[in-house]
Image 1 (cartoon, rainbow, N blue to C red):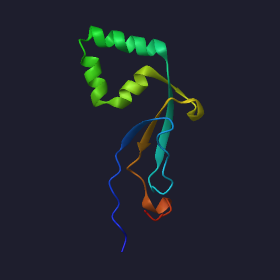
Image 2: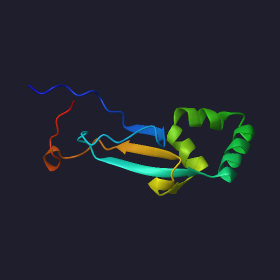
Image 3: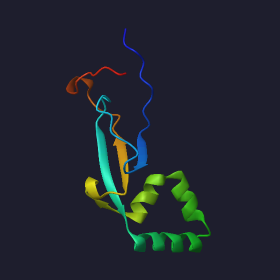
Length: 101
């Protein structure tokens, strides 16, 4: 009898070095690397002041927007942050069934 798998969140954001992809997860994963740019961070701080903190509230609700606003896409080897998107729509027959431990 197969074991029930725990639910997988659709989006995870990790600083580089704190997470490794699990090759046993039978879901397609899209990984994008981002490198922080100081001028983008300054623009976000200015936007937060001008919006009376509403931008910070938006970034709290949607952390991927904060990473995309403050960082520039780059190669995974140079990344400060990773955004891991786990695709939920896939055909089970196309991926190998791996045991979940």
